[in-house]
Image (cartoon, rainbow, N blue to C red; front, top):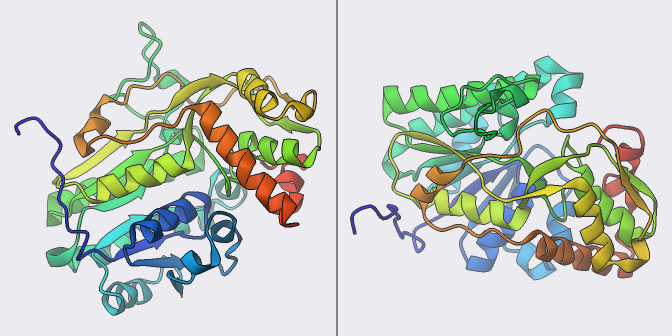
Length: 346
């Protein structure tokens, strides 16, 4: 019907490539595909499967084709697309804010050159490819980009990133636009803000999830920022990525992700409500994140309905995963961000 999102259903023909599949969002995306029964190739330079193992059963993980590769290596990327008969690409491979700050040239190589490499490889195979879907970030914006009259970040706001990471993400959005203009390559970029859930153990906005792990372990922990932020549950982000990949949108699109705006003090209170024994363990600094939390995201409706899990439910689900891992002796603080956080790097 006119005005409804354009969605194509080719699930019997799909074969997904997920870059950065060993990261948090990558692991949840891989899990979603496996549980749908859709073939998925996990492409990552790393070899540590712990985030996948946290949220997937061994028989599920056995159905994932793992390819170790460098996203900046065009021949390797092309060979993987061809050897695995890939039709849908979800591009998540990237270095996060602290790593880009520590080594800007490496950050640019992975985040910018790696993205250009993937676009180039997909361009050469447009006849069989769905829209290329990638993660941008709310980090493309700074607090000054908020409309002073409404107090909200509008969807047509001009970005002024305050970090190398944000600059790289702006560059990737530009790359997508040029590939659409020059080659007709359809793409959809999604801008998350604060993603949480099992596996979110590194990056600038990871410490709210690290706090959940600390609470389950009975350890004190200080979240590295305060004030409000827009939370998105990792499982929802994965579902949104898949909905974008299955859309029939043409051209280059970038959408802000919705979610729930929650103050960090309320986040802590919700953890304590679900896990009363953690009362008094968690605190937060007063420093707020350098990007907006009141964000317009109406244009996301173009890809169709997407899930938005209530924060209390997402926290409870994460606690249950961490409790299971703890019972199995697998909730190791150093693997869940606690060591990095205590050193000020979360």
